[in-house]
Amino acid sequence: MKAPFARKAGLERDAIPATFATLALAHKPISLAPLALRNMGDYLALVPSDSSQTLQDFAYQCVRALHPLAEPLTADQLAHRRLTPLTRRQDELLSQWAYPYVADQFQWHMTLSGSLQALPDDAQQRLYMAALKWFEPVLNRPLTLDAISWFIEPEAGGDFYQAQRFPLGAP
Image (cartoon, rainbow, N blue to C red; front, side, top):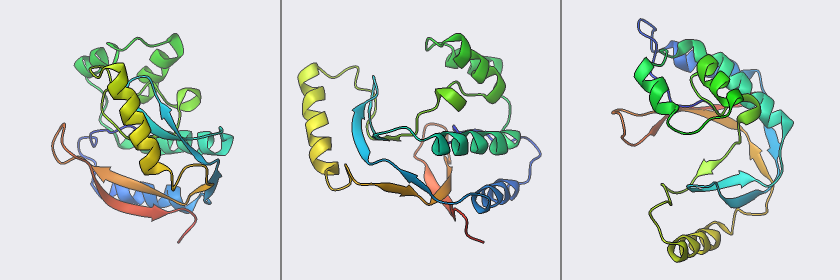
């Protein structure tokens, strides 16, 4: 819902889980359309098969609630983000929220692969078919978003791990 960010200098670490807890408590679980496997241009992802304004609104509320906890992007970080062609709207969002794919530009997804650019078309097709077979048990079934999680990346470029899970609507 919110792109990775560095904790704002001087901010107590406890402010992050407290913000997540407040956010989660204020929202009920969200029913989503069944998941579908999609090629997102450069990677494979699972996405809801139909859009949900409730999910869009919730995602934007997450961005707004968590953004004050983030260290602003440096000029180098902004320049790096702008290496990917952005629309005028996406650049406005990048300037305001430190990420171009929020609000009306956001699409909830679960990334399944790294970049597919270096793979030949036939290898991409085999990967797609293998993912389709692997995820078949969860595809085409309704989904409920019932929690949000805080993930930590201990070192830049490293793996993320779940620090804490916050059930929606639970005290």
